[in-house]
Image 1: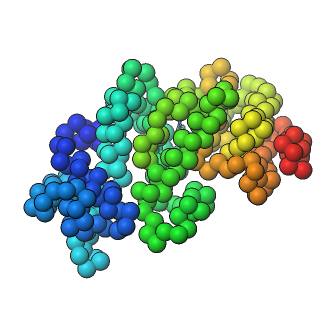
Image 2 (image 1 turned 120 degrees about the vertical axis):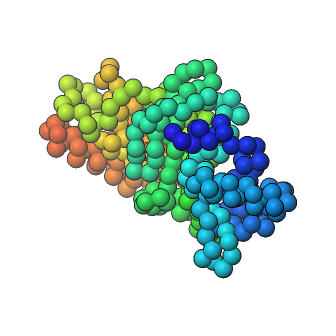
Length: 292
Ligand code: ADP
């Protein structure tokens, strides 16, 4: 993980310039040098020197298309800022190898400050698709300029908030440790995606457990996952389920709660019917949740 090496090698001035660009990206897609210089409070020559260095290292995107020279962070430099902050706050002390590549994230092994293995999820929205932006669009409706930085951070904040809200209920989700920018540090799950398991030994029990969790998320936490499917359910070696990937969640009081929960349940029903010939009554769950 190249970003982790940069966290060790970059100088404090480099970090400050990266943060200057980050701040500037709230208003500009490519931040002009004067603005960067203003945000990091370095004279222009020092700012320019740092920008050239960071650009040469491949950590910045430079563009003159807007009629001026402007700079933008790339995901790697945003990773560096988040890892640096998580290190400074004494939350993590290292990043290891990749665990999984999601549709809108990269997940890595990490090491917490007390030496435990954790999972580090780097949200990367806006890189390829905007599938998850439906929910986030509400937050950004009134903004002229929406950067991938901002969307990815919102996605991480949303997921972390979900995990925090569920934690005291002791349901089957990863423990939340910390969030900085677009990165969520959470409990590592030793498990395999339901979709990749050739044959469950106890499909009916697994299905019942999923439905019970879904009901409890709804009734006890007031939450709907909104992206539930066989790719977001991990099965651990004890055949227990863990439900991951929460950025899309919605409140159980949302006006569309019925259709959101129904869609989650339909995904589960389709998977279990197709692979195991086991099914369940969606309406029964909806009645338990008092949606019908
Ligand atoms: P995306 O929303 O981008 O699809 P996911 O949250 O589904 O991202 O994560 C992608 C993959 O990373 C998962 O399928 C899983 O294999 C792995 N993963 C995610 N979170 C964890 C975790 N806490 N522990 C272990 N593996 C995880």
